[in-house]
Length: 329
Image 1 (spheres, rainbow, N blue to C red):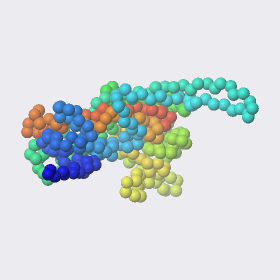
Image 2 (image 1 turned 120 degrees about the horizontal axis):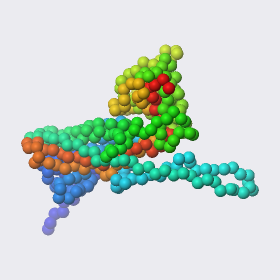
Image 3 (image 1 turned 30 degrees about the vertical axis):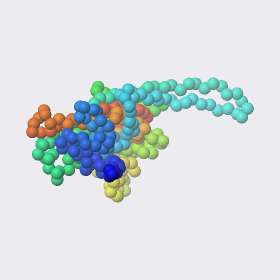
């Protein structure tokens, strides 16, 4: 009689952390293929566990507020209307003339392959007390977050996402501005705020249409935020309000503030403050989860982990993001 041993359910992070993924990283052995999210065959590459991708989402500032979609190929396309669907009014029994057809524009986020290549010594990997998966997740997330942060803000769209600051800008309002151009408001002084800086920030908020203000955020770097944190109202209250609970962002004029270090510092003509609903205004398209190859040969005695991820991004709705330009006009 043969005893039958039931296999435990492979239910995600617990198995990946303690079993097959850790074994693959430490030794290259793949004892249980089902513990991985995917496999690339004899090349030895595997899609790494979802919690590593979750770590990336937590440390990339623009990713945390943008619209992120998973795609099956690099050729993602999205159709948007430039003026909505035209409509009309009529009485109960009146004829209904034909309305004009909406205008459609195709959006194709530029993309490229993002990669990282962290290394660890084999002796470190052999150490059972070393949390190899947490180390690898942190290394990949930090490298990817730095590269993503720059691309989502100011990337030129060549083999990488096109950042929202790479779009053309204009002072015209939504009704007259060219599709794809972002509206800017002047700060009132070259390279700084005018004397009424807090009023300029209010103008920036109100320039965003009401439907987009629900879920909107400020985006700026730490040095610009330090300048704004000193602004006070006429009764002496600070415009900036610190977080009142763990996990809750600080607010400016009632809206969350996202620190993105790739936003420009204050300078003449700089676009150093953005305000908008990035969930509606910026699209990130990523194909598959992060894949990893283990290379113990190229850099002995170190083992390198070559991680790749195809990511694209661009502005999807130019009405949903507003900018402040630090100029007199």
